[in-house]
Length: 271
Image 1: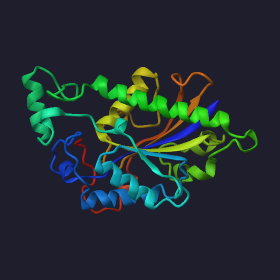
Image 2 (image 1 turned 180 degrees about the vertical axis):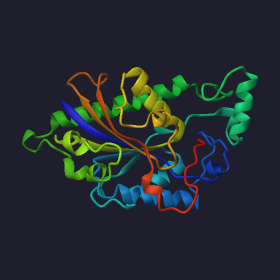
Image 3 (image 1 turned 120 degrees about the vertical axis):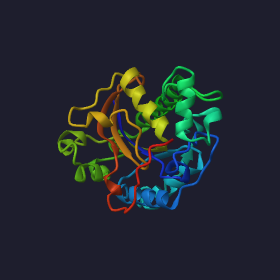
Image 4 (image 1 turned 30 degrees about the vertical axis):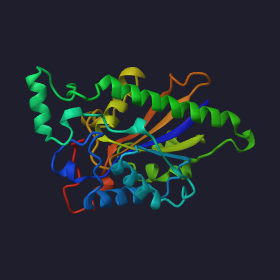
């Protein structure tokens, strides 16, 4: 069996987030000053986590967030960030650059509601989920292949101490140190992506892979859009030949307590 840790982080705030304007894929806006502060805070929280692989959306706001996080991470300083278009935000077509309120007006005129409404030129939710599925199966196969080729004497790539921030700072799941990291892991993967994309990734976990959140996690946060630099962390277990039937354990979802020291409104939910 292969087993790995998966940490997913939403990018930091941009001017468009703050002004509640849609970015999608067509508006490639850099991080704002607050966005860089958020990314630095996330980097400090994750500074002692040893990552074996780092992936990011190739849009600038995600790339800047990933680079800022990894700048603070000494255990993984030799790991190169790989940029992948499959991690991009949902495409909003003609609504990109428009206020979120305008998207809601478009949806109402079409007799639909957000977020299920697809503007002309945009991606459907099924298309976004297909991208998430494709990328998740890609990393599952990658970890399985690497684990099978690793010397059994040195089979473990990551141990509990490499993921200690999720044990030492866990407010929601105090049992994590007892049964979450008592086994060695084959990989520790960081993904930096976007709000609507991440929400659809989690829906893929829930609706396609039949993942159930543990009762101690707040229900209202399960399928909500992550705040900027919100952190979600999972342990994924894979049986040989069954990468499409993983066992998924959630350690935290949309966590943002690393932002508490920032004296600003740092949680913008517009994608």
